[in-house]
Image 1 (tube, rainbow, N blue to C red):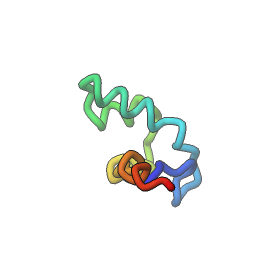
Image 2 (image 1 turned 45 degrees about the horizontal axis):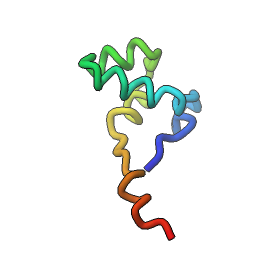
Image 3 (image 1 turned 30 degrees about the horizontal axis):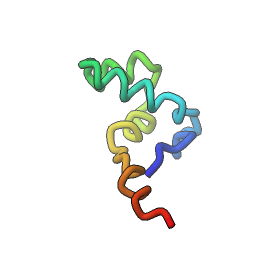
Image 4 (image 1 turned 180 degrees about the vertical axis):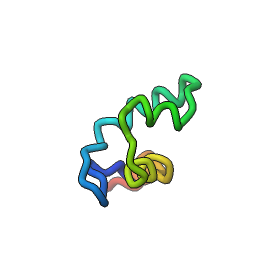
Length: 64
């Protein structure tokens, strides 16, 4: 699954924040601090980032 461009519930643009979020978490920052720093304050937007499973690499293997 690819991260949605906008939040399903509130419509806030969040797609551009996914790479920054992954970089900060990879550098050792907690998920909560990363989301706070990126301006994700609403529960609906936070749930997108916490529940997202990146399956693009697995799906790309089956490209025709």
